[in-house]
Amino acid sequence: MAKIALKVNGQPRIVDTDPDVPLLYVLRNDLELNGPRFGCGLSQCGACTVIMEGEAVRSCNLPVSAARDRSITTLEGLGSVAHPHPLQKAFLKSKRRSAGSA
Image (tube, rainbow, N blue to C red):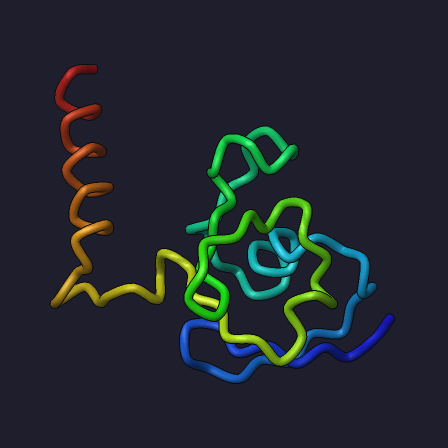
C-alpha cells in the first residue's frame, strides 16, 4: 500500500492503495465517482475515459501510480447541476430518451 496524491475534479485527494491498482477502481471505489465506468477492461470501448492533464486517457488499464500528482477530471467535474457541461447535457438527453422508449 502507498499514499498517492491526486487532484480529482479540482480537489486534492490522497488515497492509500496498491500503486498498481487501475485508476478506474480508485475513482469508483475509493472516491465514489460514478462517471467513469467499467466496459471492456481493454482500453478500447472508452467507458472508463477521464481527462488527465488535458488529454483523454482510459483509466481501466492505467495504474493509479501513473496518475500521481496529476490533474484528473471525470464526468462529475465537467459542470454543475445548475450549469451542466454540454457533454453532461448529452448524457441527460440520452437517458431521458432511453427512459421514454421503455
